[in-house]
Amino acid sequence: MTKREKLAFIAGFFEGEGCIQITKQKTYPTLRVTIGNTDLGLLEFIKNNLRMGRICSRRPGKKSNFKVYGYLVTGPKAFVVLKKLLPFLKSKKEEAILGIKFQEQKSKGKGLYGGHCPIPKEIKVEREKVYWKMKALKSVRKIRIKGGELKN
Image 1 (cartoon, rainbow, N blue to C red):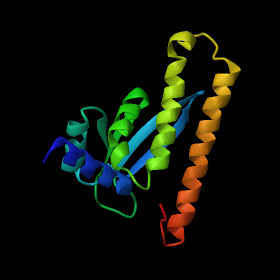
Image 2: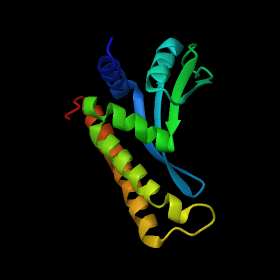
Image 3: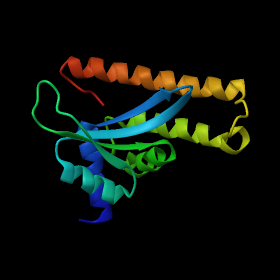
Image 4: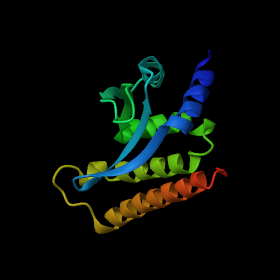
């Protein structure tokens, strides 16, 4: 398989099993890309080909006896993963673009607002807007899926 074919495969798998989130950890919103599955080998293939991220395991749920694994990448590395997968995404494309935009905004202030320096209000407001836009996108996707048809 060529590198492009591998990325296309990973993107297709990510469309079905993956998730793009902007989570609020303490007071700092963070970009997260995750993929959950019971096939550890497949997640290792993804990690090795994207050359970043980590894999963790979760206990089986009440309704399953299968061990579940999760591929996780956050922050600037999640940005890189989304940039690699973006050309191949369909249903998660809008979320990926929003995640990329969020991380670009966050990276702009890195040198200026790192450490204990306060982040200017206008930067905080922009980050908050992207956070809520991502939440709204996810709500619309759930409604479309529940309706039995995903139109993207």
